[in-house]
Image 1 (cartoon, each protein chain N blue to C red):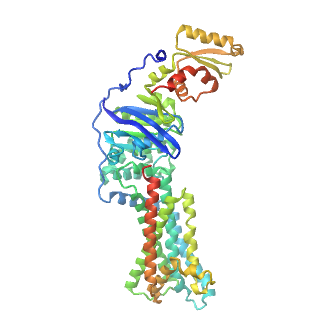
Image 2 (image 1 turned 180 degrees about the horizontal axis):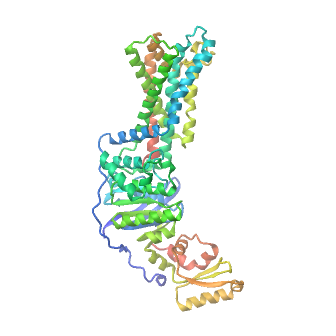
Length: 310
Length: 281
């Protein structure tokens, strides 16, 4: 398998805080890879190292075959980054932003203008081409930000929380665009806090927790690690009272239901029992140990197991 | 243990959908001064997008000059000759006034995330500062020309020949370059564009403690050394000498030394700040 990104043993310390504690990554060419993690897990630092903004203390990484430590200039020729805060120039118009990036990417005046027009049409911004970007909505800014990363068809695209702060519609539009980029062969490395985003978009997902990859796989694989069905008990208003993970066997399900029946929760008027497949949410909470107390107690065993992976 | 993860495949075989992977292009290296030129264009466009700020940069010094000439001028020098004395001071005030906006532009670039984009591209990201500095110098020279034009209309009568004028613009340009550089560095040091804007007060205040509006000799004893040994006084005296033929002495060299010194200090400080704020961490 051809790798677009490979990282081994990345460590990074800022002052007394160890942000990355030995990170390994392998991202296949043409795939969408999601780095999932809570705030402060080290997502942005990881992107920083891979995009040459941050120097790792130890470990090494190659992006599209170029070494981030020894050949940052070569890495820069092969990547584009759309960072967390929209890196657009609010004083300029959309088209001026695109032409500027085109020129800075080595295009001549005319090719830069042609590329700008093409990208504006592709990102549905041609109506706003001559408007100042400071008047744009959040979704439009994000689309422009992403289009700025595409003035050259680089092999690897980095997106740091690309849909944070966007409404549902803008988010889905952006997902469709990212999908189409990967379909056209671009390797996409994105960070996100949204499990749904990773679930819907990514070919593979890595869960970053306290500076190491706590789990990695496809969404289905990760969900399988939490176990089988979850038995949940909700009150009349739909509020979750208790949740018990099982391995999906008849025996385990019966035991979970019996347990609920015996507890005082079973006597709550209007309480209803339900059985569901685990979501990526459950995986995330189990791995990062960020669950509610009831959940953490109930899923102590699988959580412990997942934490000791790798 | 593995009972919970029976379907987990062996690691190292990521499930990647088979897609055709066309050859990708590399970002071409840019040559020569393309980055600098693009950033100058960018700063120029930003400048033109903000006509109010541009108008203020020209109108405020003109108003100040008219105020000093017509309101204070009669009290300071009833013969009406104050305009000749004050114009060189106003020129410097005007030049400094414009430079402080450089700090705001630089700070905005450093805090909004756009610098990160430039830094992940194969170009000298410091060129973004060059763009701001060059455009600021152009703007301030333009404002200076307007101020001199208005001064001539209200009775400023310099005795300068063509060469003196050229030399005067040279000195003004050097002074503008020096403080613009300084304010670019201040923009790097400031935590926010608003904070960067606040530092502009230095340049609005310094000319009052110089020979810009009244001769240093009229100041209290304790203030005189401060006024004599700050950079603005020798620069103003040099301009006075070039325009009005007052004795120059070694003041020209002192002015030159101040300007070059400020450029050097600002360049070293700025480079250090830029590495710290926008270097690889």
